[in-house]
Amino acid sequence: MISIFHADRQAFERLQKMATEDARRGWYLGGSDLSKLDQPRRDEYKNLISQIRPGLIVAVTGPTGGLRFMFSGEGVAIGPGWVKGIEYGPGDYSPDGVFLPDLDKAAGLPPNVYLRQIEPNWFIFYQRDE
Image 1: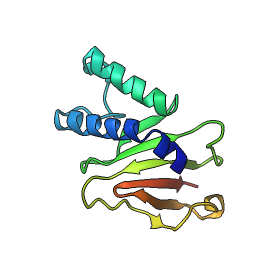
Image 2: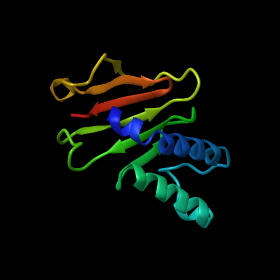
Image 3: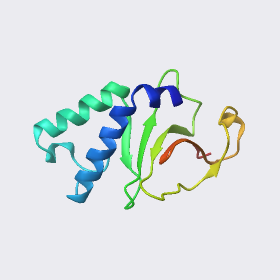
Image 4: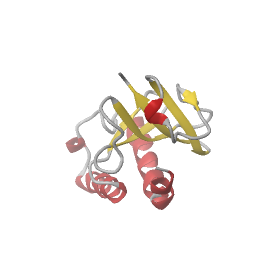
């Protein structure tokens, strides 16, 4: 996950900036109809998301401007009941969950949200729901 973030950092940062701008106008990435944006903006979202990983799900995490980039599919899935990805939080944002120095043994942890900071305002998260 860290290597994905570093390899596509510019795309992650551009998506974060766009989502913040559009949220100020009342449109939320992952929570609103993409067709409500003009075609060039839709195309930019689609291109950036597919550049990182086809099928990447991006959603606003709340009114603070946080974003979750959720990964699924071959090579990233841990098993049923797990979601993992990269989370962005603006300013002094502190995501809810348990901070760990590494997430190498996340599959053996009890249900919760586990986080590892990778850069200021950027985190890897693993969430187990069952």
